[in-house]
Image 1 (cartoon, helix red, strand yellow):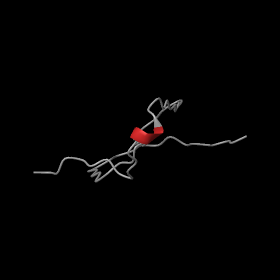
Image 2 (cartoon, one colour; image 1 turned 135 degrees about the horizontal axis):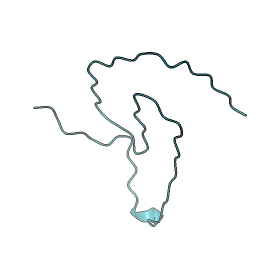
Image 3 (cartoon, one colour; image 1 turned 180 degrees about the vertical axis):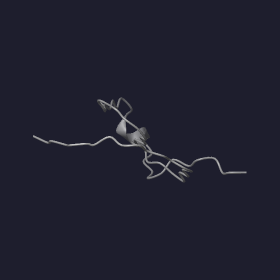
Image 4 (tube, rainbow, N blue to C red; image 1 turned 30 degrees about the vertical axis):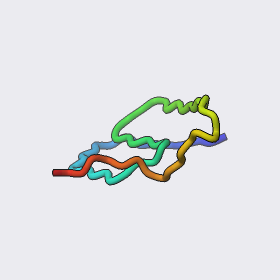
Amino acid sequence: MFHLHVENKQICVGDIRIVGVSSASVFLIGDTEVISLSSMFDTPPESVIISPFVPLPSEG
């Protein structure tokens, strides 16, 4: 069993710059009680394109 002890204190976040995300990502700032993850894959394997990053629009 995994036990995690957390002490909630003040958080102040300035700027965040994300340059890429993977196909299964979680970006969280703040509190949460539960994170539930699930996945469903109904595409035939021969039609799947796997890449490590999802491109984000360039700043401009």
